Every structure is written in C-alpha cells, then in structure tokens.
View 1 (cartoon, rainbow, N blue to C red):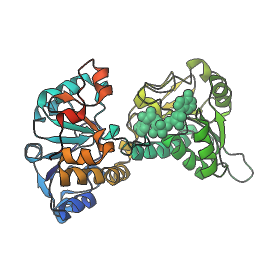
View 2 (view 1 turned 180 degrees about the horizontal axis):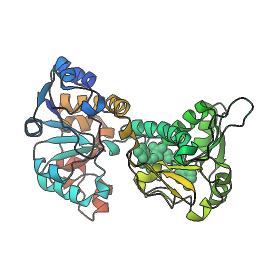
View 3 (view 1 turned 90 degrees about the vertical axis):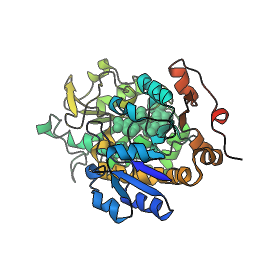
View 4 (view 1 turned 90 degrees about the horizontal axis):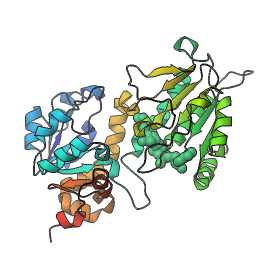
Length: 373
Ligand SMILES: NC(=O)c1ccc[n+]([C@@H]2O[C@H](COP(=O)([O-])OP(=O)(O)OC[C@H]3O[C@@H](n4cnc5c(N)ncnc54)[C@H](O)[C@@H]3O)[C@@H](O)[C@H]2O)c1
C-alpha cells in the first residue's frame, strides 16, 4: 500500500505521525512510504532519516494525492479540507464530535476517516489515547513543580523538600492514566501525593501498584474542598467518558488555597475540571486567579514532540500495519477495536456518538464497509 505522512500545519504542533523506525517496518513489509518534506523536523527527524530507511520524501500535493492511506497527528484544518477525497483512508486524531465543519467536510468528501481516539478495546481501553495521557500526566507533575518557584509566581517551595524540611503536597483529582502518571513523577520528585477518585476499584489498584506510597481518598465536593486547602499543586485529571469534564474545583474553593499554589488542569481539553480554567498554550502556559497559578495547556504532549512522536508511533503502528496489509475493510473485520475507530465512510457517519452530536444519520459500519468475501 502507498502510505503518506503529512506534515502538521496546526500552530504549535511539532509531532509527526510516523518515526523513521516505523517507516522502516512498513518499508520492510513491502509498502511504499511517502513522507512530506520536513514533516519530521519538529520531532528531530530530518528528511534524510526517512530516506535512509527507504521512505520517499515528497511535496505536500504528492503526499495527499498519491497516498492510499494518509497518516496525520491532528485533525485536518479548514485549509486542508479541499485535499480530502474519495478513496483515501485518513488515520489521525479527529475529535469530530466537537467539530461540525470538519464532520461535514469529511462526509462531503467521500473519504474514509479513522480516528485514533475512538479505537477502543473490548475492556474499554483507548490504546491510541493512552500514550498521550501518560505524557500529559508526567508533564503535569513537572509543570506543577516548576511553577512553584518564586520568580515564576509560585509559593517558593521545593516539591521534594530536603532532609529536615517537609516536602510539598500534590493533590491529584482523577486517578486514571493521567492521574497515575502524574502521581509516579510527583512521588519520584519526593512530594506527598494524594489521589482522589470515584472508583473504589481503581483506588484499590493504585494502592496496590504504588505500594501505599500515595494516599487514596474517595472524591466528593466536600473532600476536594478540604484537600485543596493543604495542597501546593492540584492536578485535574478526571474524565467522564463522552461528557465535558465536571467542574469539581469551583472559583469559591480557590479562596482556601495557599497563595502561589499551582493548579494544572489536564482535563482542559474536555473543558477543564476547574471552574476558573481556560485553555492556554505552551508559549504562554500560565495565568493567575486569586493568587493561584493556573496551567491549562490543551495539547501538553505537543511540548515534548520527540517523546510524543515515538510514543504515538509505538501505539499506532500495529493498526497502520493491519490496514496496510489487509485494506481497511478486512482489517476492521479482523479487529473490533479498530472498527470502533472508523468514524466516516463514503459519505456516511459510522460512529454513533458523532452522528448524535450533530443530529445527523448514523449508519452501522457493516452496512457500508464489507470485507471482501
Ligand atoms: N491537556 C492535555 O494535553 C491532555 C492530554 C491527554 C489527556 N488529557 C485529558 O486528561 C483527562 C484524563 O484522561 P485519562 O486518560 O487519565 O482518563 P481516564 O479515563 O484514564 O481517567 C479518568 C479518571 O477520572 C476519574 N473520575 C471521574 N469522575 C471523577 C470525580 N468526580 N472525581 C474524581 N475522579 C473522577 C475516573 O474514575 C477515572 O479514574 C481527560 O480529560 C483527557 O482528555 C489532556
């Protein structure tokens, strides 16, 4: 199959959808890999790295026009809509339930669009979102520690303390993938860590794998209110699948927090779980409300593209290989997790929540995408 890798055009997006190592695997399996010139630059992969493993470097027009399967990181933006076309399989993060213009552009183009974020295993894991949550969680603890420094507007406290001086306190609200990863870095830095969650099973699991090095507490409005009064860093990491993040930390609660403490609202990409949170960027990541620093970068993994690009390729490559080897129809018939990733096929919406979000018709995937007999 001819597989294209497009360069990302969104502001501040430095990731690329395929590493040279991934390209090598595909070339070895006999596929033709076409990489847009300078697509890997932001992740420290130059064109020559791709050429060395047998990929071809091509112009933006050639990559979009000649590919059968096109790999990207972010959803197409308006300037890319004219490039969407029938016969192309697009594999990328799409998030179209929240993007009506893109949904229409995909439907009207006749493209086959597979979204990383809706690929879902039988045990309800999201294998192509997890690596980004891991990165965001780990970064959240780092960002919290950093913005506690006095010259940056923080309390002026070293999260890990030193012998003879108490460490700082980190409160993680939501102990899923983000929360767990935030916790292990915060523990590593020497902080005292508390995780609030609503799932008792999840807290049992966290307690077990973290060998009791965190305190887990059932999440409630009252508990959040009392816990944030002691916290130096609060990390918002909740997710209610299919819904906007609940506002668990209200503006009123900020009043009980220490001046110069830091809130990192990782859930900001789902609207944020802190009432006073609004999206920020890597170039201007923080602002203060009532003396509390807010860090609300909506695309945290974009700040560490070398790591993110590799983690993304690690997760996507098995699916890319399956589509390339069998074609989309056969690949989804073999793998129900991948089938859930298919959002739009030949003008029909095949992922129910997207159809519902935009009050459009839903067509079951097996009615439009039949595996060859
Ligand atoms: N800003 C970024 O760059 C970035 C990157 C990756 C993920 N995220 C976001 O981070 C959030 C968390 O993602 P995740 O992968 O960890 O999700 P996850 O499903 O693994 O974990 C979410 C956790 O929140 C818990 N939860 C739900 N309601 C709660 C409540 N009221 N109080 C306490 N806990 C509650 C759940 O029980 C679950 O354990 C999501 O909104 C995700 O979109 C943001």
